Image 1 (cartoon, rainbow, N blue to C red):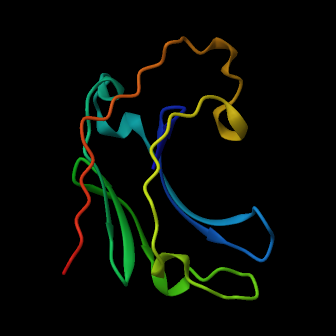
Image 2: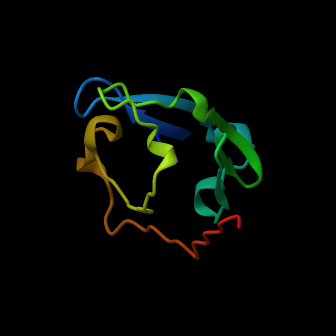
Image 3: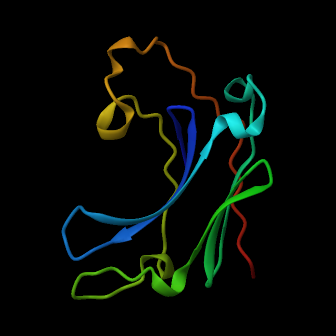
Amino acid sequence: MEYYRGTLLANVAWGTDRRFVARWHTVKKPIAEFKDPEWSKAFHVWRMDWDDKAIRLYVDGALLNETSLAGTINGDAARLNPFQHEHYLLLNLVVGGDNGGDPSRTEFPARYEIDYVRVYQKP
């Protein structure tokens, strides 16, 4: 899940038949739809429910994206479903890049605060 340019992006990506080119299932939600001008200054609960059928991405209890895992098969010769294998969690702050634009007007230090991360696994 990403936040930039006043928009939340709830993304799920997997491989295609081209190296370093992903297939994306993305849902965009403008921050303005939350009707809170201070939304970006508050803490929010971001959640991912991932089971053998789907990945569901939420913010503050609102479902943003649901991706069925029936179609998330990598397009290479191996034809693996990446969401049926082990993963690790990566949380990062990115400035600039292909989608972030020119970072020259970014004020530093930037704040990236994470209160906690919880991971649960069904038995």
